[in-house]
Image 1 (cartoon, rainbow, N blue to C red):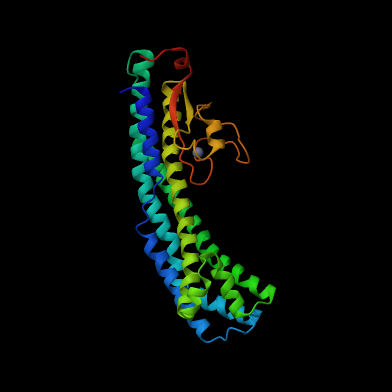
Image 2 (spheres, rainbow, N blue to C red):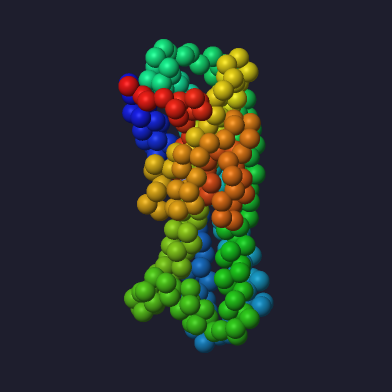
Length: 301
Ligand SMILES: [Zn+2]
């Protein structure tokens, strides 16, 4: 295999890893959306459209909504942690395989002999899994608190503006472009329209956390392996590969092909600090590949 092909295969694997498979989380989010929709519909049914949405009504409604999604809220964090942890383990195993084939292809091409990569991949995998699980549980907990916080803020804006119940629902439905259509179908449909928007927003949010963490897991296991390899066989550096990202992100493109020692960071770009490896930003699909400075002077054959 040519080194370029091995690097390209690695980039494809990063792309693949960044498509999260959220089997446990998605049903929980759907349940939360259904519960919000139902409670909002019930609440609207008992209100007249001309009533002012004051702070007492606000407090009661937020408490009612929080109660409705309480069960889902408790399940979001663990479901997110479980989905990402499960996939990250597989992702790391794939990453280790790709690292090995890049090392072999590169050394054969630039040095004329295959240089084996001596690392304890199993130890790296086991070590990182535990770290990730803890991190994802914390992210999941913050995530569910944010859902309720966001709902609270958007509704509270109506109190500040002195809106009526009717004005509040119009504002919340505005971005659907279907304010009239939802309203003509009654309170249940209005609840559904509003909850649907929350649902989409948080589904995307969860996905972007998962995408970013999977790319992180992928790169981290490769960086750790190279760091370990450098103990016995010094001279490995990392090269940033923005092959997948160049259409969308100039910051990643500006890091493309730049190098860093495995125990150091790439230079800082834009508002992002110096990173030891991708992802640079949320949903970044960049990767790294192994490199030796001496390879730059040699023509691959
Ligand atoms: Zn990127």
